[in-house]
Length: 234
Length: 219
Image (tube, rainbow over all chains, first blue to last red; front, side, top):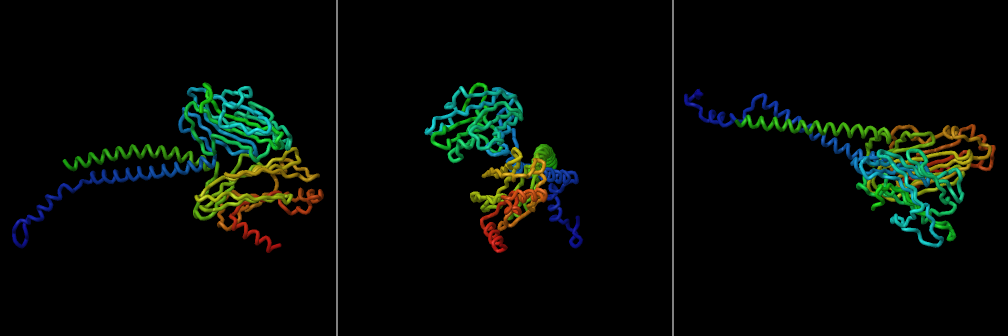
């Protein structure tokens, strides 16, 4: 190209065009660039939404006592809201893989009056004689432990353990007129947040210790747990 | 050559990004469906102002059972109070949590042997169980119980918001008129005729102080 005034070749402009030629893009390349940006914006948006939804689910699962099965090969359990005082409910998941699980109830075991309570965390102190073992099929189940509240202030209250709404064990437990709430405890491995447990582990759904109201009243201990067929493990 | 290389990089980037986006989209749809399922259980309650209290009644699986989803702001010291037909009542302070929190409050009723009304109230950290006598001459069946007047301001299924200096009544249950008349005739508890069967609410210590002052002024 000539310079109109001097008639010389405009070297600077040519050099500039030559040096910038590698930064000129075809329409298809520009479309590819825009598509790339759009795809990665979508990736970041989805990732952000997934994280936010996961956080919401943690909160909602706790509020709704939702059983979350994170590992299909592990036992999972969540404590459901109690319907009445002194009653408890759980939703559990038992895997199809070995070992098979059973629902074990031990107690109520009576200790002598004027003695300290049994050590509830050690299941071995519970008598084998007062042990009921119920096989549980793989899948999701509901377990209820409840009093018969129709007879208040009696010394003995009918107590039930239900599996999927059907009574699987019925026994007498000393009523509130015999034991005192102060000093009596109820502990559990479960909570209102769903939890998975290591394979072959024992899950103590409830360990209840009832302290006698008077020195002449005995103390009682009762435990409901999920136990692998091979025996209890800690 | 350079342009071709750029194109190749872009195409690979689109392929990888597209695959991740599709996977993330599938994960999101699954999680979102689960979120909607749980939201249907505990109710949808958007928190527009985190410094306020939010309450929403949620559906339960049986009559005689009531539940509310509540949001409490950070540094909110909650005190639960109730008052029963016999003039009895109580209060319980819940420890001061630093963080904002949501929980479900449940109140269950049931009639035992036609003579006793059992109430079980449960919050995340506390539970309360008490029995109320059904007055002599009052033919109160389970069916009648669930027709009792329930008026608390949050009995609908809408989201309600409150300032932290306000008391929130969740439940205010009173005998219906035709039972109230029998209740009056049965006399011993006549003085409590206008009292509800159960009032149940919560508020901060400051909110209850303000409420008590208003009640005292009105008396």
